[in-house]
Length: 95
Image (cartoon, rainbow, N blue to C red; front, top):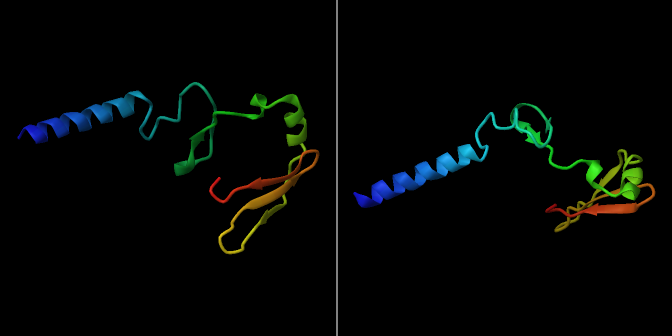
């Protein structure tokens, strides 16, 4: 009986902490500290924008556009793209 009581109290405290920390379905709307991007189930809060980057990186970033290459070899999966002024950028398969 004690075990059920302790487990229930623990689960309730976790749920309360999650709700207080901003969890839940409607938590993305109305929170300060970033704008919301996406729609439907795929909404997320934007934490960092290009404003956090150095001035040199911001200048290069404005030239970024299309053209990705995926390494489809077995065991690979990296994504590559060219960023004019910076060079070739590699994104690992596990990000």
